[in-house]
Length: 416
Ligand SMILES: C[S@@+](CC[C@H](N)C(=O)[O-])C[C@H]1O[C@@H](n2cnc3c(N)ncnc32)[C@H](O)[C@@H]1O
Image (tube, rainbow, N blue to C red; front, top):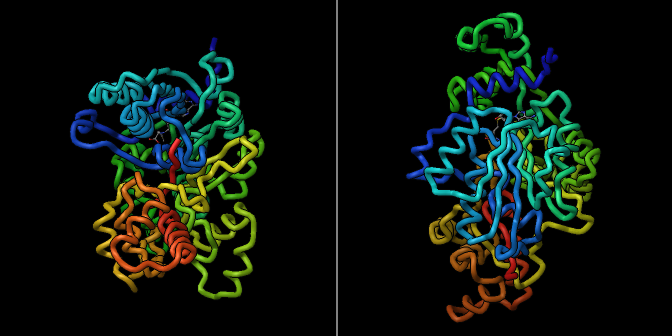
């Protein structure tokens, strides 16, 4: 007789409701890109921008679901003619079928598909990986720490991992709703009845209810019934604070090197009182990030990169040979919109962020093509009109870099 395990309920959910819902026919018209695991991010945060795509590269997408990260990464590596293998692993065969169909629609032959639990990775005999993606999975494990350790056990010594976990404070309102639904729509009920009950409860929530007052938690609207079930009826769901993430990584022998969208993790972003902003600016990364998450209160997910390498794996702009690369932003359009004096603005899930850019911002951006280094951009601009001395120019580039990288628009790479 086999003993039922908590993973059985998780598997059953994703067999019935693969998440997120995807139609393989859409591969003909678009590639879904995201974070973590965009190849520009992986290169920037984990390989100091110096990945050599001529060398073999092995990636694991653990809990790959319907395939967003797997398809993106496999396609981006093929586009760079990298001799890569991407291994997809998931508990749910229904999810795997969707991802397989998406890979087939794109003619991707570099993905190897496996069905199973990531907890079994140490004994699977599938080798080790340069990069591991684990997005939205560990918070659905009975013991997330065991999951993180299983992932770390198959990570190359200088490899890295990109993770997404739920954020505790930004999911305000979700857990009381889950609690009510355990009473109103227990797991013994049919999935459709549970979903119907959850919809009813949402419709009749009082205006004071925290979930109703948190419009940024909206998977139940954007991802249909699968999203609603994932958000409110999941059998295992826990959210993390930044310090808990530090512990989770540390217990697996890993170190967090950056959170995605670094400005969101800087207290100064949300703090207009300069004394407090200054006081927090000298804290180490994890402490600054922990302070920022308490202050902002709206970080509903945490995306972070971690490694066990004992050297700096993040690309830095100090080197004039750094090649700035805009991520899914048209340089010319951005440059036109940023004439001198125009601030950079972003809506950080309800927080209106504005940042003054250096005077040369638009001219520098107009030269960013993902191939020219900062030094080459300086040379090119100097043929088009007066420029300040190199040191002043470089200080302006660094200022621009911090702000655009802060909202995940700009990354760096180096020639290899
Ligand atoms: C919320 S979905 C996320 C899917 C995908 N990573 C994404 O972000 O689009 C979680 C996925 O993790 C899978 N999963 C949960 N526990 C797992 C485990 N122990 N081993 C492998 N996969 C697991 C589920 O089957 C499901 O497909």
